[in-house]
Image 1: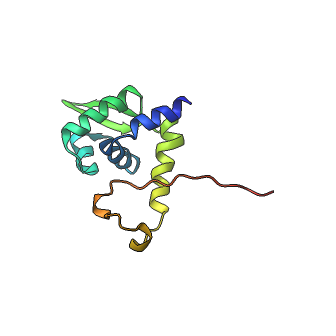
Image 2: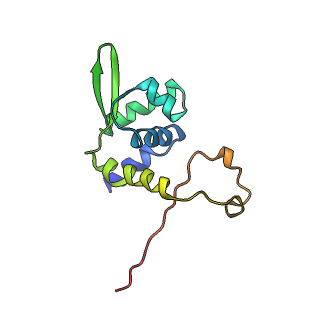
Length: 122
């Protein structure tokens, strides 16, 4: 499915994940520097991510004087079906107790994503 391939390409790197999370939680348009700051990444990584995001129409681009402003394109199918629900669900997941995570060093974790399925009985 095209949507899944696009999502995998966009969310395959640490910077892209952090940018997606920052944009999904923000309302409005922001400069590349502001988004890099919100995502906690450097400007170069953010600019590289924007090239992919713009080419897939994940973000909308507008001008403001000499600046370029980016905003999440919430009408895009990948954003509506995957990115927005994924990061909305992350905010509802309670913090995992350290003993449940095992010996994983949490300071090295960039993102935790739960994948699974649900069976409904009728």
